[in-house]
Length: 285
Image 1: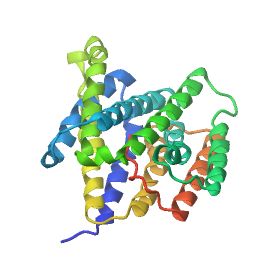
Image 2: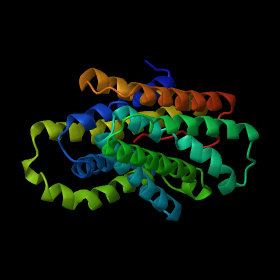
Image 3: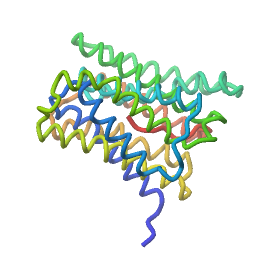
């Protein structure tokens, strides 16, 4: 039976959305978790995309570092603040894309984009309203930085040099780089004393939440899903991510955060519907 290609994208987004609840469910630190998750993710993506080769060039090398930064900052943000704050603030990436894409690729800056950026900034500000713990502020800033890395990673995937090699190479080497950097923290921490529960969470996050999801997403695109459709379906992730956390962990975001997240997602979806982005669809954290 031939499934509609869009279902592969939907399945990928559903898997990506489990990141928040599983990061919250483990007692591992952001550094320890990032080591195991990235090690297995690198192996999984390499296995699934091995036919496209593993060559890398300067552009994909920089993209790999940005991807590694995005992953680490997102896990750190999810550990420090609420999962809703982490995922909504990471999805401010389109703001940076709107601002820097015309500069990097000599494209015309459209006046209507200014309105989208202004609305998103207003939504971002709401995450810093109300009674905040110091770790909430640190987590929110880490999430914003993750979105910045997210945006420039995506922008580099548009670069002509990136099209000359397997684009998954940046994901593979980004995970390898992060695993190497985080290895000392892992082995000086839990090391071989890793519990079965934590090991299972690491395995799911690395192999399924990143590896399998990435493969399903690229399969859907390869079978004809438009970038615009993929981008719209992609918002399943920031919507469901905090819902899973509320249901299974009991963590509830503040009313200000919910309002800010709704404003950001609404503005980005509105922009996406008005003009399909020329950049490739965003990848998960």
